[in-house]
Every structure is written in C-alpha cells, then in structure tokens.
Amino acid sequence: MKAEILKSLREIRELKSTVAKRIWENAPPVREIDEDHFDGRGDALTEATIKKRTEMFAEKLIQKYPNSNPVLISLMDGALPFASLLQNALIERGYEYDYTTMQASSYGNKMSSGELIIGSMPKIHLGGRIVFIVDDVCDTGKTYLKVRELLKTFGPEEISLIVLVDKVQKREKDYKPEFPLFELSSKDFIVGMGLDYMGKLRNMREIRAVDPKFLPTEKEQKLLDSEGAFQAELKRLIELEQTAKPGSSSDTLFGGILENSESKSLTNNFSQAETLIL
View 1 (cartoon, one colour):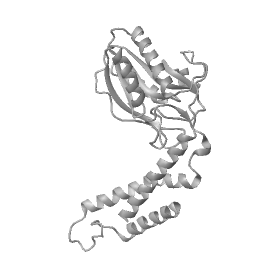
View 2: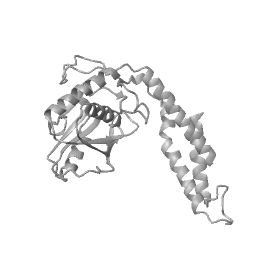
View 3: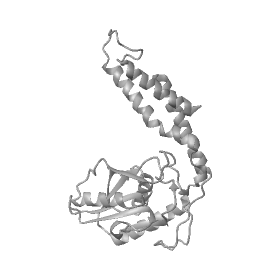
View 4: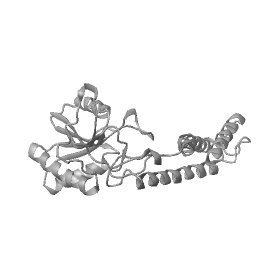
C-alpha cells in the first residue's frame, strides 16, 4: 500500500509538470492596461520590461524616501522573485534598507482567491519604521489589508504596499495599492514571477496570461485533487510505523497496527485513485 501511494504521488507530480508546461507554452505575455503609473501603453510583461520597470521604480522610491532606512517585508512565497529583483536594483543604487519576510497566503490550487492564512511574522522590530510590504500581486486586496492591520499593532510610522501587479478592481474601503508597478485587468489569470499554478511556474521570469483551454481536463483535475488524500494516507501509515510495538501479533507488513476497517478504508481509497490514473 505504501509503495502504491508513493507511485500515485509520483504520477501526480509528473502530471503537474506536464500541465504546467502545456499552460506556459500556450500562454503569451500579458499586456498591462492603460491606467498604469509609468505610461506603459500596453507593454507586455516580459523579463526585460519587468526588470526595466523595477529599476525605474527603485529610483522613484529612493527619491521619495531618501535616508529613510525602510523595512522591506516580502510576503512568502510569491513575492520572492520580485523582491529579489527589487533588492538588486536598490543595492546597485547604494540604498540602505532592512529586509525580512512574512508568510501570508490566500491562494490554493484553483484560479480564484481562497482562505487567508497568516504564518510566520517579520523578524525585525517595526516601531517607528517606514515599512513596505512587497508582494507579487494585489487581487482583492484582502491579504494586504489584513497584514497591514496586523502590523499596525507594532507601531510603524508608515505602511505601504509595493506590488508587481495590481489587478485593478473595486476593493474593500476603495483600497488601491500605493506602489503598483503594473496594472492588469482583474479578469486576467496570470502566472510567472512568483505567481504559480499548482506550485509550478513561480520561477518563470515573465508574466503570462493563462488560456483556459489548456487547463487540466476533468479527468486530470480529479487526479490532481486526490494528492491531498494520498499524502494524508501516507502520513498516517508512517505514523503507524513509528508507533507500532515490535513483535505484536497485529503488526502489519509496514510495522503499523491497522484495524480491519482501517485497512479496508486505505484499500478503497487507493482503488478509487487507480481508476483515475487509468
């Protein structure tokens, strides 16, 4: 059973790679709308355009906040590619700042926003500091607004959002990101530069618009959705291995103690997954 579960998880990983490659190869670079702050006039978000825009923004930030020694807080994991690019631009211009990370996420394996989860907190004291939250995309704005309210309790002088992509839309409290580098339609489903699909494509160096025709088929999606159940069963088996008493008459092949009903449950789950794979 354990070997079969590992085999299924491997097949799911391979399917993820196949789907991600299919999506990327059929997704052209997305173009910004005409509301941006840099007069981009519909520039495609290619690697060169993103780098140039980041450098332009770094210069504007330095002019607006000279000698401020601000704190940059990168939201894990999506902001990392953009945060790295921004830091390089600031360092090249000799700008002094402090950097830390924070974990906040509202995306899962689907196309739309999900439940907001706050994880690790910044490791730098924020009292009296100018703070910039750095993120890859502002969609509904709920992630940032909740993070901002949380960080206000630490007494910063100012908190602003630096975001690579603003998906323009009406938001709670009419909020608009303070420092967006690109503005896109809220209808665009985008990947690349921190924006992932099923954990893939996050490290691609440009941003593309996904064509829904190349998303997983119904059969593929069922298999992809079974990953969590397989992982939970694998974890359960490993825990049973670790807690089993050697020499017990009820030890299983895996060294764990499984009641008949539990064994049947595992077998049934695997049989259903086998059908999806086939």
